[in-house]
Structures are given as C-alpha cells and as structure tokens.
Image 1 (tube, one colour):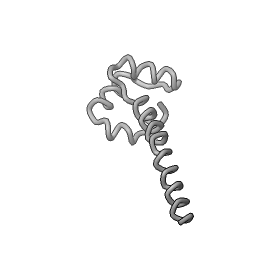
Image 2 (cartoon, one colour; image 1 turned 90 degrees about the horizontal axis):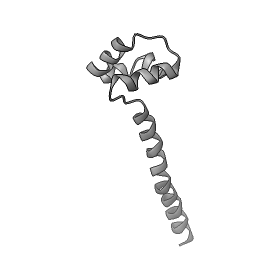
Image 3 (cartoon, one colour; image 1 turned 45 degrees about the vertical axis):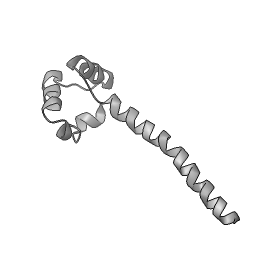
Image 4 (cartoon, rainbow, N blue to C red; image 1 turned 180 degrees about the vertical axis):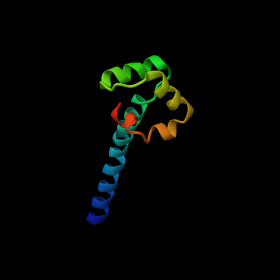
Length: 76
C-alpha cells in the first residue's frame, strides 16, 4: 500500500506544478501580442533593433503565424 501512496503523491506533485508552467507560457505569449502599433513600437525600441516599424507591424497584422517564425519576432 505504501507504493500506491508514493505514486499518488508524485502524480499530485506534477498536477500541482502544471499551473505554474502554464502561467509562464501565457506570460511569455502575452508579452509578444501587440494590440496597436504603439505597443509594437515600444517593443522594437526596447529590443534595440533597427526596423521599419510600420512595415513590420503590417506584416504581423496580416500574417501573425508567419511573423512568429521570423528572427524579428524572436528578438523582440
């Protein structure tokens, strides 16, 4: 019976850790979702990248999934 309790407690620990992992992913994703060009401009300025903000933001709005695969997105 001790083995069953031990396995159960390990499983419960994993369940309790899960929300923290999810929270980190959500924060990371939320920080790279821009609602307007000013939010995007702030991210670009903070990153130190030299970009045409208007063109990059239009690309982000037109095709967010492709934009997320670019080095620009990874560096912001």
